[in-house]
Length: 530
Image (cartoon, rainbow, N blue to C red; front, side, top):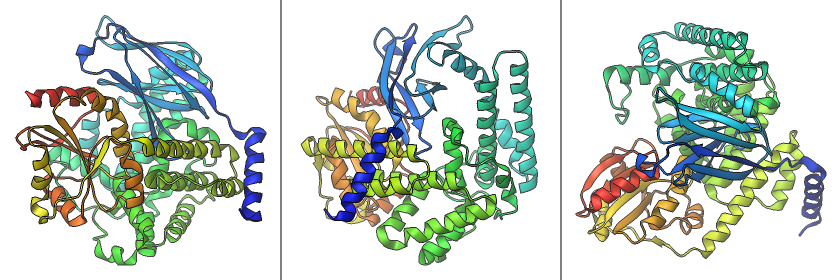
């Protein structure tokens, strides 16, 4: 090790041991009264959209036969978590070291009610009262209202919608149903929600047109001509309070940081500077302003694979954001930089060295954020170690055949079995989340005539692919882009993850299978096995 590397390592060690880490074990538990596995779900999800790393982290909690559930996990900052099971979803607020109990039961009107005890019980009880306001909009009505609005009319509409919601929050506060802390928390989430809606002008109107015209979202053809938005439209971004660390405890801040990077002006500038060859091949008027996470990950993947220089892209993003917001954005841009690092090591499944961590630590203004990156890095190291011991995945050579018959050649190997097909990629965070959810189901069905088939293309780098698949039980294929393009057309794939089901005779029975809980998949697969 060089003297310079050793110096970085010593500095890093000293900084870590001087108390920057805030990690405390945090627990969330409770009971679902009257629960039975016959309801169709057996797991509860506790999901953190982490504003420090830019990644979604899902804790899968098994629900016992008596309805009890519990989990303990390390937490570093006060944050909101999404709780999801069956058709229910809602939020809980937890701080490091908390022990929160959340009991669910149905009232006389058959409405699911939550009763909290333990740490942060009062805060969460009041937070629930705000959910009807923050999550209770009639989206069908909103879509009807906004479909034909011009940009200024659209902004005025959402400002008015926000004012009406604030009035409702004011009423809750005045009546004493919520306190000042919960009021401020909910109002800030509402503000971020409004800003995100304003950023999504074109994509929201596209959705509205599709909903009203009953046009499938699988149909990639744009249903209206999108309007290019300039910096003047985004003037509301200069009126936001930036640099507040308390922002990371709000669920909508994670979404806001992501949306900031999809502005028309940023995307166009980034593509123009970073990948001029690719830029010249695309129709700028079509959907560049409404790039979703998976698409943006593909762009980043192309940049990282050498099509363009990532540093140039980041400079373009930084300069455009500073210009639009009229702010140095030191806090936000540092978080976005951490997102870049986190997403890169997560996508590639290649951990940072101690040297690299030490250098990042020195550059960070907000030193306490490093603990999240350390945990992510350690998780990748542990996963790679576990994968090296795993032996239950099968890597298959793609049959040497013309692209338009590749799927038939692949699937013929599994005739007599029901097949669950997963189109995924190593860089796709929702794909990885789905894979984690499926682990226990695959173990449960390991003696049954069912195959789990995983198909990816060349955007999954061979290094990340080889590192990850040994930990994913199933049958694996990494096919050429030509072959994947044909399959994308055959299965009408517009984004990943994308799932399909094949029966025992090799027939595709569902080319676009949707699921929310592994229990749904289990019941469907068992049905197809009959």
